[in-house]
Image 1 (tube, rainbow, N blue to C red):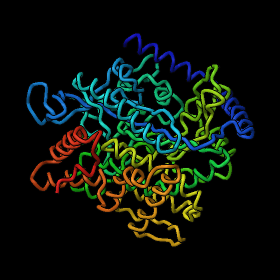
Image 2: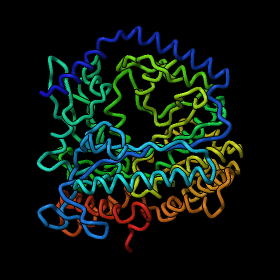
Image 3: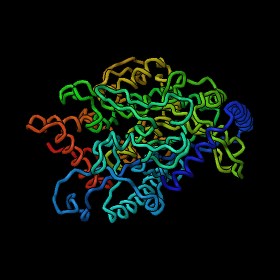
Image 4: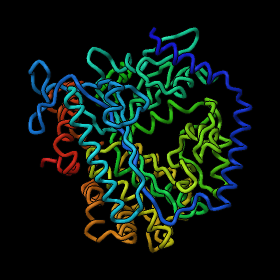
Length: 524
């Protein structure tokens, strides 16, 4: 055990020694502070603002020999499958990305921008600039950052089960070997919880003594800062109504690493029974426990105060101590800490480094990582456009039953774009027709973008990747399933089929990441 491991174990013990009752009292007091600031209008903005969290995992076992050449192994053999790779911490600092749960993860968070034509363009330009610089740096290290909802090929010489379950113990404190030094995640494995973190998905057999299985997945997370914090419940309700249809267009995680499937699971059974978006299954089953449903499709809100109270009342798994500081939101630091484990598929957030930067926003968390930058921004644009258009036009989908919205979400998890969805169109007609649902959804997203100053051509351009998916009924998950099916039909075994699919995914992403879209991957 290294000195760094011992230091981490000591910090974990410090968290475990925190008095949970005192933590709860401080969180409740912080909630009252936030509600007082809400009454004073502190969290209001003069306009809507957008942002994006953009997650990746790294692959290596070869080198990228320039932008116009194929993947090559370092021993010169072409066409090998890119394997998962740990990202050196020094490299993350060099490229300006943030740590995520696993050592293979990296995350970019964009600077918030006003929701107008220039602001959207600024978001795109920032991602392109930072990601291109990061890829050039990691390429030189024989490594590449991949935007993909779930990795399927473990590091060289390891199984996925070994990588996800490996841990060490220091005087009773359990530390996941391949997890970043995020104390709250390590502390979850050492607290009063279940002690075993298992994945519940068709034919999957995985359990670990830490939350490392959650590092299987990556996502994009659009943020929408509301102009008036008092309106958070309305935007929250609408975000829940669009969650199912948007997820149906974005599904991208149909396969797990192969050694995580049960021994008696056949390729045919996995294809027949597997879900299109297993990221949802991983997040919910690993981080939820009986009596503490931390990851869920949340219920509607009646008031902005209720949004604050829900965070304060959320079951505490890890009472992370908060330290005093000079930031504005340090005045409610314990509530912010608690919010760090308030994992809902749609969640309201209240924070800000200064009083003038204080904001109330909706974080939209259902969308998995996407094949290209353009595909990713299609979802940010769609989500922002919808939250602009639907309230302005008093769209009747606001009155869709919450249970129906929830059922839409989990139907999309299971069946992707072929899910049975229910919707209320702009003229008040209830429908299950996919063309009507996606047509109404995307036309309102486009209208919302035009409302904030984008030209018709700009709005159409941002949303084109989603219109193409709706028209062709083809998503990244469906593409992956098709590629594997074709390989199996050609006589490959399941491991070969999934490996070939993953190699093609990485290669095509390299070719289209900055300029193309997922539609460019389709060769008829």
